[in-house]
Length: 450
Image 1: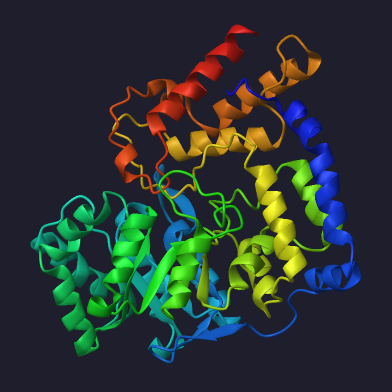
Image 2 (image 1 turned 180 degrees about the horizontal axis):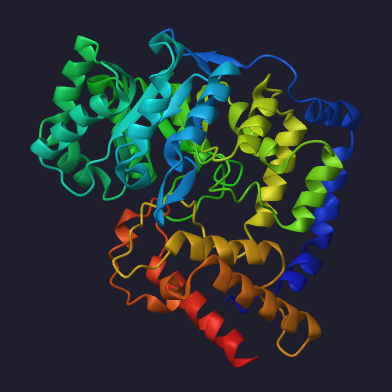
């Protein structure tokens, strides 16, 4: 892929910075810092109170976008038995916030979530869902989507309702989706009637758009706002995303509770390059990579809950360990993570969070899996080795074999014709056809060098 810097060269040029970061982070009070990082969990869930509604919300929220799947008659469907098991375990251990959307999991997310939650008392959980009217902004389509959410989730009120993914297209698109069709006025009346208890929006966009939305706070009274926040995006966002530090600061000024999405940046902050993992382990040997990211997100006082799409029980258990209770980051730990983020920024990752908003591709390409495979190989050192060396030959073979195993040939990057249908839907503003073309050229080069 990128010929600017190889993994070996990157680690070599970064080695002095790594040593400096580790030394700086471990001087002065190192024993206390390391102790707080390793002594996670073992107690009760941490809760935050929403001052607008009085809701006592678990700091760990369940993102329902990545429910486990299974195959039935060669078709991928949601594994309802596993969903029920995960929901039961989460509620038993203090999780009470569940975030769904009509568009997730090919339109089946709300139904599966509703089936699992309806087996529990209604007052034992808070349900959030969204008006995901990206493709059809007509009032008729939006109203149908809104009412269908109640039926699918099997509820007669929604605790948290979001205008979904504001920012793409700026305020012009916001007005088209919610103002011109009268939906925002309707939803405010629904809030007055109690069918919506908290009304807010999720955001992926630039400062100008966010500032415009904040200027509307007096008119619409945003009860909460969902933002992308993690230790990479705090100061180093890419695409159309704004620095999380700025977004959070603007919400804090107005005393608007923040709900956090992408605390792991699509899993990337859990699956880190080896030398970054070594840095984290030196600070806190018993802490998982993910726990650092979740502690970072949860340490902001104005955060109501941090969403995690926990597909597997081990993900849920690790996050419960981190937040039961939350041990907030010390100042030196926060500085340490910002130094780590500065190093991570130099790695040429494809900034995909596996949200699947780009799917389905009309030509059958598995866009998220292609990007995930590339990022994984980058982490493991299977990219950017010099041709002709023993290391290059090993890396080439590992990349090609794992690529064919991860992505069926008819769903690989060479199938892209740059129709650009996917790009407007990407919250990270990735040039998807450009990145697919880059990966295709890289794979062709590997195959030629066999």
